[in-house]
Length: 455
Image 1 (cartoon, rainbow, N blue to C red):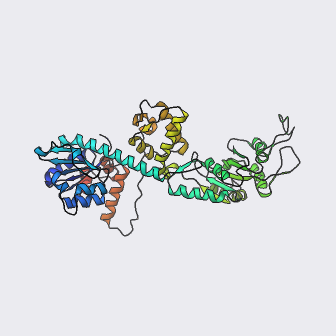
Image 2 (spheres, one colour):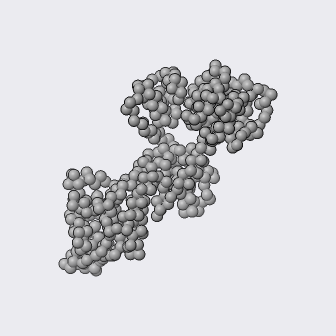
Image 3 (cartoon, one colour):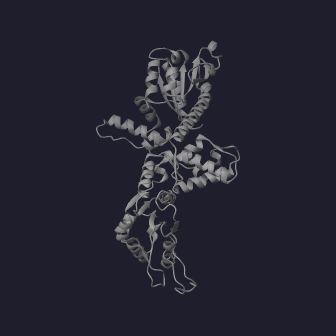
């Protein structure tokens, strides 16, 4: 059995409809039973089903409008299965349609659960594929690329606008974000959109370099300054004079070096190691760190005066788990890149894989996602990347994207219970057994409450 689906059953025989619904619920599906066209329309307005299983005459009945026709507008991705008398069941499903909503299959009455479960499973899988394709298309329409930053996310769009504003200024910029979120892309974008764009840009990672080596790298050294210094050496501040220097992981910079960096930022002066001649430079500094730099300042492991000097403008890059709506866009972008880099034919990816990748936590953020896409493109055996091609740690992951509850102030206990059950169902992806276990109630109690609340 694949993922759970929401099935709308439209049947005037309540006992028969509930028997079908109970069988589908035992398989983990969510079901709602209605007994008229009017109730079906009301249900379509409240929640889009994956599959509509309906009496043919009820679905086509005119009232406030044909349910078949209205389903095209309210649930465009739903698949429709009609239950019809034996003499009408021979009509191919695809010939019964209004607009774009074609009927998946017509089944002869009386219908048993054993007869219908396989048909519903296939229809649900097709509906989910349609929905995933539609979502990808809508996301692609919102896709925006700026200096290698691919996004459709509102927060990221605000960051891009901030990059464009600070780039034209003389402000020192501090970029915060976890490892792999794209901090250097932001630094490069600031340089390219600044008046210094024709001048040099260089980057240095301050992590892992001891004080002496980092000082030499930044400020240079003179011949004989230390063993092995056989000639004068220009530091990065001199190399990029007039341009931009990106100090990555500035939070790892040794305290003595922080004082020397502050001096340079304050007055534009550098002193090479072993030298006695101060040199002047004009360098725009962009710094970044994965650390909680405010906490470091409080603990006196990072100089407060340097923090304030670096923090003339701060940009915080959210982790990938906070911009999950961008993941499908990034997947498509990285798929195309990987196909070119590894000289592979264009590879498609199944909606199930996209859902898995979107639901993962991504501690390594965009860098990790790109690595996973590269791996799958190289190792995939078929033209489509499937769940079997996912790395084991993602394929077997039980990561769950938490659903945020709306404010509960002013709600009755019954309304709060309904919200809590609905949120937990969403958290488990519709799995009723997991939902009941999390809620600490029995499966029968959960089913009863679902029916009571129309969930």
